[in-house]
Length: 334
Image (cartoon, rainbow, N blue to C red; front, side, top):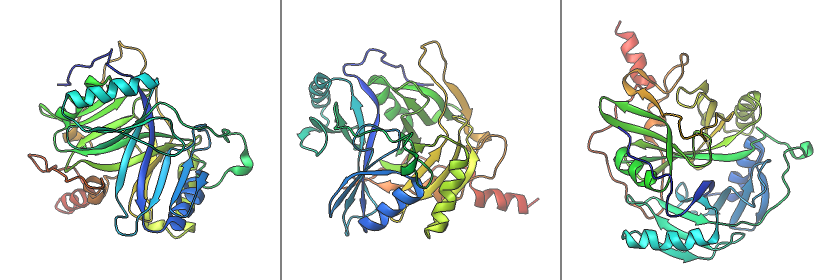
């Protein structure tokens, strides 16, 4: 069912690095991410705010860019490569396949390459970034949920298998996957040796469903919800706290002031060894919870941040997940 993986890819993507979002009110969005999630501001000006988790030494993992007209869109998701020479190889690799690739200057990063995957997902690759001191034991800086580090993205794609095959050629392996019959609906892919860097789920895309930060303690997940409520974003606690089936993590999902979805969760297992087989999940028996908890609202399954300037493509078949609305309707019929 899963496409083959190239374990010796042409260039070496090492991990999820950063995400760039557009926002309507920079101060309000900054307030949410600093005081509810607990991220730290590395630098900022009147139009851009660079943030990182407490355990992150690299300058930023989240970039908020003021755009009053285009707010609520994602600009790019970023990955690190190991060496500068990987960027040169990547440039040729994408160009040889007829995919966009151009060099850009981005603040606080070394050489940066903008590329796109086959469905138009805008990617940003860099090998270096300025550093700041880690603050994970500087408890005087702790706020909100004490978010530690950016871990992964989940995106929508009109055909999960085709996009999974593309990233498999780049060395991404699957820790777990979601099937219905012989159709691949969800691929949970990684590079850094945990179970996730990029999740691909079949739906209208490309679009950014969510990005996720780790927390050190399970109680920090509840703290994120508490601070969201204290700061006036309580209605944006969209799902959880709960426990996933895939990955097995405790989680909650929040919507920021512009509707971008962010997950906080308590990390997951290692997947470094090559003999470890991906775990299969049957979509017909899974609401993405593990053993307990109600399904998510329909909007959790269908809403996502569009990518700036990219036209989405619908899948051949409309997804039909077990939503909370459908679950309650079926229960009331019994």
